[in-house]
Structure formats: structure tokens, C-alpha cells
Amino acid sequence: MYDALTSTYTFSCPIHGETRVCLSRFRRLEQLPGARHPAVYRVEFACGCGSEHPGLVSHDDLDWAPLGLADETRFVNLMTSKLEAVAGELSDVAAARIKAGEWPWSFFCWPEERPRPVFPSAFTLLAPAVSSDRVGVAVRCPVCGKISVNLVTRGHVDVPFLNDREIGVVEHVFERDADATVAEFRAELESESFDARRLGLE
Ligand SMILES: [Zn+2]
Ligand SMILES: [Zn+2]
Image (spheres, rainbow, N blue to C red):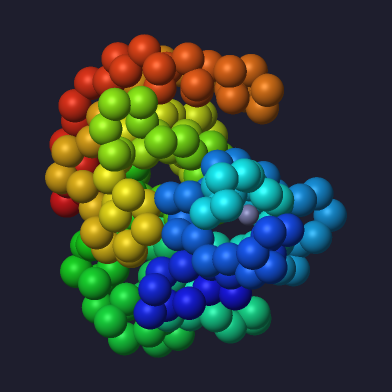
């Protein structure tokens, strides 16, 4: 499903049969109700054929496979202080970097006015920026539960531990309602009213 060498996910395409896409080509992520062990996410992705298709991704593939971890039995919450107890299960490289204060993914929470560590399963909407090759990401904050929209490079999304030093932030608190959020997200991306924020978590 996830290929660590190319940082891509494999999905099926009605035209190509099989296709590989980076996380930044995801457009919408939504946890399926019911399935919890492991949780399963329904995604829509922008395919190389020009269309968007649906696909399914397990929580493990979404959050852990990019870190070199794919074991179904693992449950780790890196947001808490349980890090020490689980460090032995993390891949050596990922564990060393997280212990040194680096985070695989981070974003800027606008309602809290601060950067936060995050995992891809917190991304809800993604879309290419209008006039640059950056990508807009709507992230549901794991701490306050509110959605913020950041404008980041593709690498920031696709490559763990590659965090942009400075990102664009929309000064807007988004509705919790999914459809309203999609409409607001598109409007904010088109308006390009982003403020720069530093992402250093230290
Ligand atoms: Zn396709
Ligand atoms: Zn927050």
C-alpha cells in the first residue's frame, strides 16, 4: 500500500488500473465510522489520469508506514508523554529524531496561535494553491479540535521530518460541518490571504 522508497500510496484507477500518489495528491480524508481496529480512512486523491478517485487507507498506512512502521498491532500516541515507553517500537531513526524534538509532521494552529505536532490522519482537505506549487492543507488540531488551513510545500506534506520553516496561515476559524468547511477552504485558497508563521516547535 505505502512504498517508503517513493513515499507513495498505491490505489486503483479505472483508466490506469493501478496508480501511485504522494500524500499531497490526496484531496479529502475522512475516517470511516465503525472500523476502529485499525481505523480506516476514505480518501479522494487526484490521479495522474486527471480525475479524482476514492480509495481506502488504514490508519497504520497513513500515519506509521511513512515512518517505517507498518505493524497493525501498534497503538502509540505521540502527543502525550508516553513517548519513552514506545520508543523501542519506533524505527530507530524515527525514534531518535522524535526524541531530539523533531516531529514528522507539524502545522500551525490558528485558533491557538502556535505550532503543533500532527499526523497525516489529522489532515482533512488538501488542494493545490492557485498561484504557486504549494499546497493548502486543512488540519484538524489534535489538541483543540479546531480546523486550521496552512499553505505549505509538497515536501512538508509528503516527507516525514521535512517541515517548512515558514508556512502560510489563513486567519480564519473554520466550521466543524464538513460541507461548510470545504466551501470555506476553497474560498480561502482562492483569496490567497495567507499570513506567514514560523513553524519551529522547540
Ligand atoms: Zn485515474
Ligand atoms: Zn489547536
